[in-house]
Length: 369
Image (cartoon, rainbow, N blue to C red; front, side):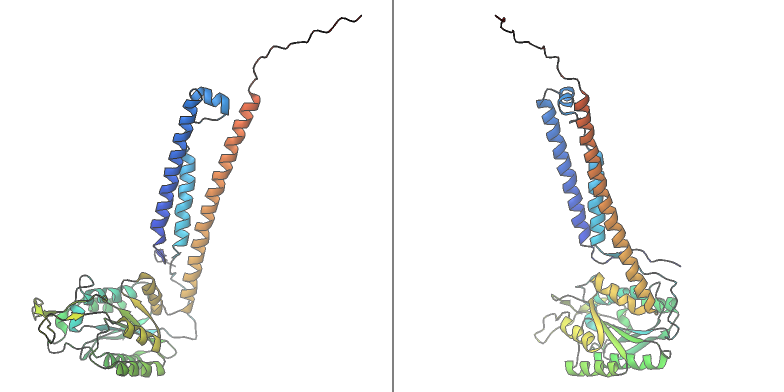
């Protein structure tokens, strides 16, 4: 049984934890400096120790380590670490999932508002989605104005990965710049019907910028048709709202100017997130942006054939969070124990210290008459 590397669901908490740990170090350093100034005020280190019973000049390195580590552990727990676990037996009554990855290769996918280009980022996301430990049957369909079946559903994921690496702008014809989303979705549903095993779930993952050369109603009608056949339709958006210019790529792969609009200026293509979100909603799936790690992590589960895999991943995440939370609490508790022991030693040393030799005086008594 093998485990995937631990992944963070909310990585933004990590810099917060680093800042808190730094504040703790700075605070303890400032506290140590104040104790040293107090020791000098009391007449030096030895005099301060005789009066207070503690070493005011000592820098509390153990407190820095304990509290700093506690802050880092708490931040890791808040970041939501989890991992997928391989080796879980599949449900005997269900066949493996079959997934068609549908990649937009139209001219607008050459925009560079997502580095290096939308198409390059889209193919990278596709490869990451079904990387190990994926166990579904996977097929790939490319589309622009026409559709191009790159790979029929297969369990040989290494072969699919090899084919996707060869997806370049010159695969499509220069006379095929449009995006026909409805045609791609219906063709993917047909390939799923032909290639899916009995009892297995079927899903489409559409990777596109949402630019379409047809009415939205036609696209949604195709999604609903696929959903009526029991196919889940997910969508991944590639691009930005600010958009980017569309280069014209020649047969040699070199850029030969830009696509122009009706006014003769370079046309700007923008991410059509609302359409992609509606596609996912109508298809019973999920939407994620190509740069949204949390959403992509959810879609990776589509490629896990056994439902127990998801449950195991969830339990693994809960266990890691509980462990890190416990470590943080234990470190804070140890710091409190050490602080109490240090104060106890100071009180004990003061109680054992002999007091000053004060002469005793007796009041003279008046003579008795």
